[in-house]
Image 1 (cartoon, rainbow, N blue to C red):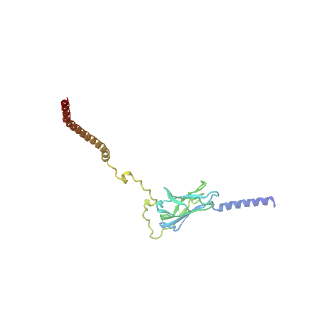
Image 2: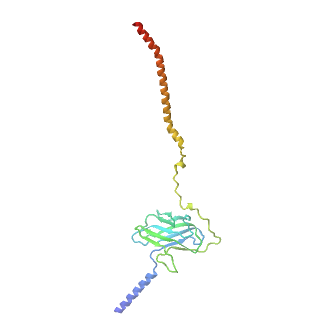
Image 3: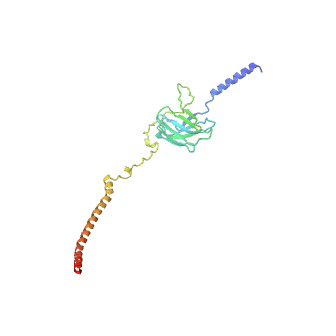
Length: 244
């Protein structure tokens, strides 16, 4: 085999490698699918799949930014990895729990009360791994070009005949609000100040009255003893003079 043949073979092999790399999709993506991908469809199950891309850690948290027209109070968790829970936030929700085994895709489903009117719904997604690695699938396609980290997009079909928007879901259905801590005034009526002061002063007033009454009684008894002892003193005096 001549050197020229070797060079040609090497060049062709390199070109084939480049073409294969360009033709092969990214190893990891975040995707969304729907049980009924029609605008204004009701009680639709959306399933999100986050493909694992780390060789050393498992996915433990998924953050979803909900598009306009899908309020967080209209969303409920349907299925998720064992131990994972949903927490609503200002822009959407987060599902998280124990880290998945390395290489396992994270898949969860939610039920949406009603899909909005439109042609497509983007769901920007942020994945967090147990080692702190973060993958952001939040880029939108511009001018038909495929971004490096595209956000999952649900393409919508036209609404069914007669479909209409439902009334807005009450905000209270998002999550139960914590019960307010009852104040002292709400749990038991406050005692009026005069009653408290009068009750505290009552024992002192009673003590003073008792003291005054006792002194009067003692004075009367002493006076009576003095009056009663006077005749006795005179009798003793007379007896003393007679004896003398």
